[in-house]
Length: 105
Length: 232
Image 1 (cartoon, rainbow over the protein chains, first blue to last red):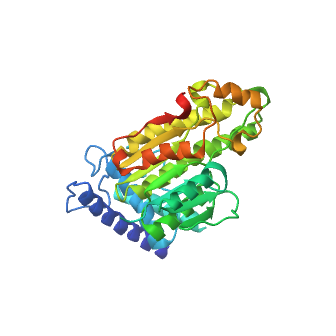
Image 2: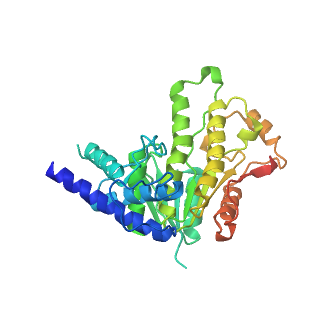
Image 3: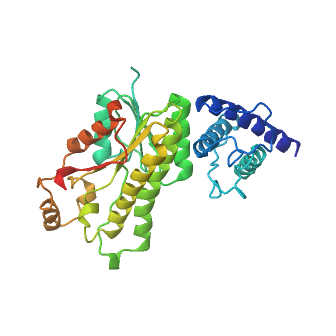
């Protein structure tokens, strides 16, 4: 369990790094005070659909580099505000973590 | 200029093998794949044994390319299978095989290819459709449906990938004397050739010529297009 928490924290770090990079790349202003429940898309979200897609793809690649695990973050609920695993930084980290656990077992 | 990194599916034989030779000779680093092993070698060529419809295997292939080259410039989705049979005697296992290779395979490679290409904000994807789509060839319902799907994929992905600097186009060959048409009766092939403006078999070079055009860096304003050979 301790390891799991550490992995989720690491994932949150990776997401934050990616947000910064994509912000620079796509010239999107990223607020300084991001929290784990910062919305990633939608009316008050950080990104438009292309930005979100970029984040998800970049995260897949980071996870592969950092954890040597190839997971697919593709999800049918991607753009549904209510149930999307990409809603917030935390939900994305948790979703990625659940896929990593599936892969590890 | 750095050598272009070109990934071609279905390179064991036929058009794919020709294209591997052609782009290796043209100075590209060519990465090829097929379901079975190959018994040949080429300079600047590396081969992977991959089932194009197997997501895990495809992801592994792209992971290797990303680790080794950090980029992909060109993707040629050549791998394809045909089925020539009356619909009433086409088993579902054949339907699944054709759709898996032609539609799912093409989609998977486009998806994973675009992920890699977007890093450089540059990429060229060429898919394979066929003149059997506009000719609505009887006796090839599933093959034609799968290649119509490839055409639609090409048109929609062109829009989705445009902002990533990636173009997606399709070439539609006429019959070429390869394994794919070996089982078709000569009279049927002749009837097909007769519907072309230029009534001859296609050649590998005809196909490479179209692909060359789509791959050119100058073709950055050409996307979502398909080009049929032979004047269909």
